[in-house]
Length: 198
Length: 388
Image 1 (cartoon, rainbow over the protein chains, first blue to last red):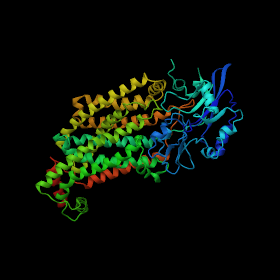
Image 2: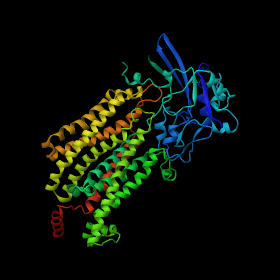
Image 3: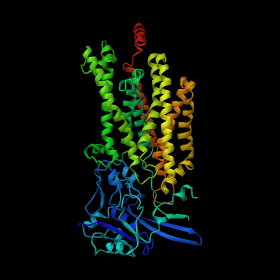
Image 4: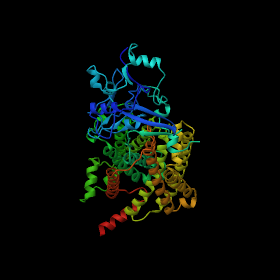
């Protein structure tokens, strides 16, 4: 079996320092105002009974990516190891992938004028390094590796820990596994936003 | 339990007015073509006299529709990639071919429909005669066999045009319907809803264009057109009934679907009420339906024109509510996304609308729009022109 890259984010260890967000920007030269990787910070409950949560977000490199299915020019493609990449020279900027991604992972790079998103720092992987966000994480909350390798850290965590993914009801089969993520954080509380809560 | 996002990145609505208006144009093109193909293709004699008006409208609307998309691309110079790299799983990729085949089919259909009139009017030295001679490409044969061939070919390409028209607008329904991330779009009804609202707005615009062509080309609305308007209005009534029924079915199922679906339905009723209930369904659907239910109103041209204008506005609101409204509900984070139309987009929409009107008016002005039943009128007009 070939490689299947995945990321595990252990929220019990995340301190909310946003270093991953900064490292990603710096590594990938991401322009101002847009993010490949960002940390959502939320507060649930009502003072004084509240909890603070952090949710680092990035492209889920889904097994069945919506963005790949809808791209009219096949600019989005998937490697054998599961990494979903974009051919920046082919992308026409129709933005269908952005509309179709359930995770808001994509955006238009205002400088390059094409769709863009996390690549798992593909060039770093090729050089035998870890993605910049994993490399910089001060608490080891981010773990990256091959989910098909039973000796890898991601395999052990996914096998032994209670993990969940964002919006499992979609047929995207996302490959970012969270440990200790509240479902309230993984999806927008739409009834709260539009009203309609009974 | 409330959740407050203290920090989150901003996400934009990337598909804006240009995309909604594109759907609107292809819809009206397909609608007006299918309506006017009733004569040539389905042999309903009385619609034959309006086929020419309808086909020109369908062609011009469809030639301008994709320009909205081109202006919306971040990399318009790479549009050719759409033809070089095909992705069968992308509805947008299907559309690329439909958007080429459909106007070509319509152009051939129109050519066979206009050919004999070109031949009849090609002798002369004016601009029109020269244009007709050019457009004939040397095919000036007026034998009985050639005429029969015209009839056969126009019927063939017209018949081919009907499924293409259905596909060219149906595919846009798939563009939204295939997106499972957004509950408001993700319904199998989407292509049919798009088609029916296309029939409504296509018929509405067609009635107005037909009356304008009659008025400016022939001086007045002749009796045979006057007697046809109630028939078209009656058809439009039924299109609205079906479209309305589909909207109701869509809405009920959305209300009882997932949390995201229910939230979307709730948003349509509350947050987006003035546009969804007021503009799209009240002013744009219920009111014209009430007007057209009365037989007396269907026979009155002003009443039919009012109903037509209302449907045109209503369907535009429907396209905007679906395309832009569908993206206002967030996929992550805790606040609604806001859409503000950019000056760039608005300029292009207005510019293309003006260009469409100019090109369409030019074609109606220079092409021979005579029709069965109006021949006499045209010749008298022509002799008057010569006398002057």
